[in-house]
Length: 238
Image 1: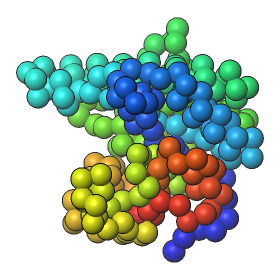
Image 2: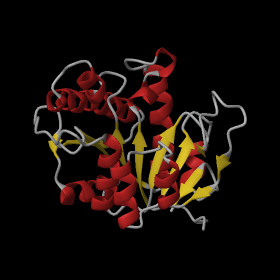
Image 3: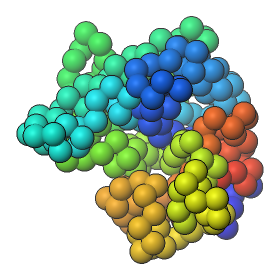
Image 4: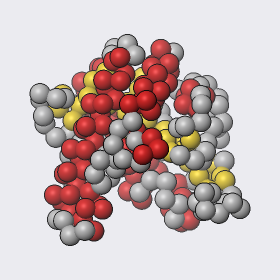
């Protein structure tokens, strides 16, 4: 059943590609600033925000591994790519007047705080946006799994998975014009149907801890504000 009241604490999962704009790689500063403005608006409404960003716009570990690189080394490179995105988003948010902290699972004190759960929660309580970088700090885990893990650790009420489509479909709507969109799904249905919205480890973590996931279109104007206010936006997995 859909929630109707606003969320108090959320975990926003962004793909690295979301920061790349039309180019598909690198960081588009215009896209970044629009995103920062939207995040600033919902923070201004009193919602506590944690963010996990992927690094696929710079380097994707699993792709490097398929091209002959050692998987662990490739994943560590991907983790470093996420930190670049975190720092870029932090800069954009602070230019919007939003107090922000980056916490990294791989220690790099000159750039970010080390990830400390209690400190992250304290930042949230003080009204700061907290961006979690470097994944879990371990190879073989995706940033989707990081999002589920950090959401549970900070006591988030929901994982908001921002994508380029307005929910979950039974096939790619950009390829199949007859693709069917789901309003709600159970975790088991997502796993059984093989719907690639998050990896199976992330879905299982959310299922075991009853943490709902909402998949929505980040680029739809006002979608982020609407979803955190409790409107029926995107697809709910619960």
